[in-house]
Amino acid sequence: MVRQSPPVPMLGPLQITGQSRDHVIVREGVVLQPAAMVAFDKMCKAAAKDGIALRSASSFRDFDTQARIWNQKWRGERPLLDKAGRLLVADELTPKARVRAILLWSAPPGASRHHWGTDLDVYDQASLASGQRPQLVPAEYVTGGPFADLTLWLNRHMGKFGFYRPYDTYRGGVQPEPWHLSHAPTARAASRRMRPQTLLRALSHSQIDGKTALIADLPQIYLRYVRSVDPAPTVLG
Image (cartoon, rainbow, N blue to C red; front, side, top):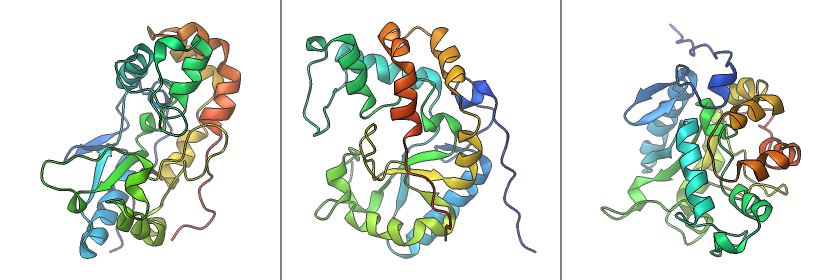
């Protein structure tokens, strides 16, 4: 018997913006939509046969978690980096510049693809020393980095399981993230449900730092940092 993939749910505004989690399931610390979970499990098993211990550093992330990350960067409690990865001083930036700096590496609350239960950040546990944790920086995923072999393996195989990198190239907004994978079948359905007014509604009712500057610039932010991503390949596999 051929096992059918779980159905892809039609997400509502609360699910799209991470204010609900009834569209995801939890398995060994990974939180994804059922269809994405099945695909990730299969990919992990395939990677293990090639000596790669594929793990998730982050999967589903709710609105409040994304807001906490945003606020910590706004206040300078978490590193705020420029395009080259150099440390910025949050208090030295105008509100608009601070918003744009955060957006280079972090989505606004309500706009993260992690809210959808379709995306996750991955690394190779087998390439780390005991007790070492991934930093999720580009240098780890290129030649000479601990996850260089993982990058090559994903390049060859991730499409077979429906995954691709939405932040593979720089498109004027978010910096490339070689660790960030998206499950195309579920992410396409979620992306169609994301609208500017959905994001505005979520932000308007939130308590986040820099909200005035963020909302004032939201039309451009939506186009440049939310919508400007690499499309899923037409043919996966």
